[in-house]
Structures are given as C-alpha cells and as structure tokens.
Length: 322
Ligand SMILES: [Zn+2]
Image (cartoon, rainbow, N blue to C red; front, side, top):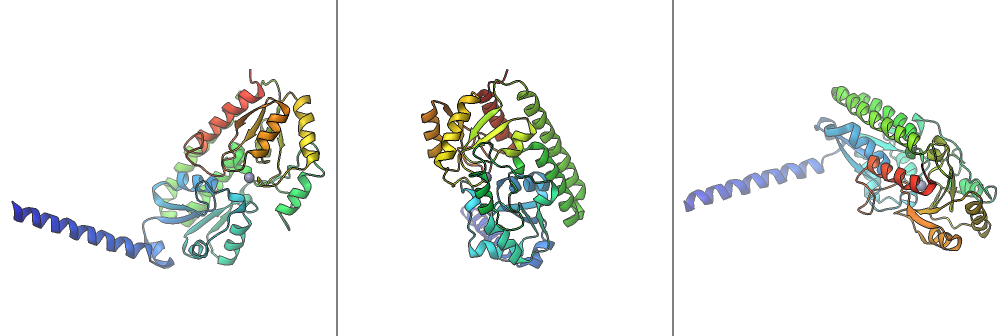
C-alpha cells in the first residue's frame, strides 16, 4: 500500500516535471517554432481587436492583447518586452490611428502578418455638432497628426462597420493559416450573423424616440449615431482625457435644453468628473454608455455583444424610446 502510494506520487511528480519542461520550452521558443506549433499566436492591439481574433480564430489561435483590461487604450504605452514580442507574433491585428504607441511599434517591428482593420471599412471625420470649430477640430488635428488627420477611429461601435471588419479579419486568418480556413469561415459567418441581429435590434429599438440627442464623455459614438439617426454631443473630443473648453460646456447646456436631453453618459475606463459636473449643472441624470475600449468586471456584460445590448438599453431609456 505504502509502496504503491510512493510510486504513484513519484509518477505524478515526474509527469508534472515533464509538463513544466514542455511549457518552458514552448514559451521561450523563437518565432520559427510558432509556425510549427498547433495554435496561431495572435497579438491584438486592444479589446475590439481581441474579441474578433478570439471569436473568429476559435481553438486555432492563442490571442494576447497589448492593452490590459482596465487600461484606457488611447494613451497606451508599450513595454520593451511587448514591443519585442511583436516580432514573434504570427499575426498582428490592430486599428491604426487610435493608439500612436502601437502604430509606431508595429511599423518598427516590420512584421509581415499585420492587419490594420481601418483598411477593411471606410473611416469618416466626426466633428462635434455644436461649438465644433473650436473644439472638435483642434482636438482632431492634435490627435491624429499627419495623413490620418480627422478620421474617427471608433468604427467598432457601429455593428455594420464592425461586421465588415470581421469579414476581412476572417479572410486574413484563412490566408495566414489555410489548414483551418473552413473553421475561420464558419466562425466568421456565426459572428457576422450575431452582428446582423445586433444591428436589427438597434434599428428597431431606436426608431421611435422622444429625442435623438445624447451627451457622452468622449466622442466615441459618431459612427453609431450616424448609423441609427442619432446625434452625439461629446463633452471631450476623440481623446477621453481632453478637457472641454468653457465655450463647449456652455454650448452643451443650451443643446441639453433645446433637444430635451435627459442623460449625460459617462464610461467605465475614463474619468467621469466632467460628465457629472455637466449633469449636475443641467439637472440631468447620468448613466453608463460603454465605448467598449476594454472589458472589466465593471462592464455591463462579458463581451462585445452583451455590452452593446446594455448600451442599447441605456440609449433607449435616455432617448425615451416608445
Ligand atoms: Zn475612444
């Protein structure tokens, strides 16, 4: 009895040691080993890219995100280790124009399998609707220096644009890993169908509302607003940390009154200080509208689809949906 127990303990310890060795060998392997491994190493720049890679890649990919949960992505800085890790990735998925540090690192890494999802759909310039000249434009020029000036990067908040992006990501994964092309195609179709249902829910849910205008912390919802015939009034610009001017604040006050706005939205990852001040000064209530730039325990849902459904419910309440 005792002897047998000893032997089995030794066997378990041996197996554990073997497992450990295998893991160590795997994680310290160089880029050439990744190709022969059974899963594609995908690096995603931030949550909306991570969600696509996980849903479309399924069991065939191992996804890591450069932006850790709870970190506001716009101002992300990368560690030397993360920058180095880009060289080892089999596939890099990112959205150019929202995280300058990521754009620079990817350019420097000279990785071959990179996909900038802004190439998969059309980008637009979304200025703010009131006091726009002073506010929105300066903000944009500062945020997107160079060729991309003015383009709003928040495409994932429009289910239709996000679906276009999903299709492109699916095709790119098929090309990168042809052995599993059929699965990538199937997973893409499933996701595209879910996004289609989400689009329908938004379209019908926001058709009849008392007002079409909502106030948000940072101007992340331009594409969503345009898709469903709404007007977004951002307190800050595209960058959530930007401080609004006194002129912008007073313009918001008059818009709130004229358009019968009920709610000032704030979000989970950025400061809600200004939103709460605006709400207090105008006598409006506050609620969360999540720009889905990251998922945390505070998020109203576990993934993109769930949080988008929570956002729809919040918008319906705020806009007085019938
Ligand atoms: Zn943003």
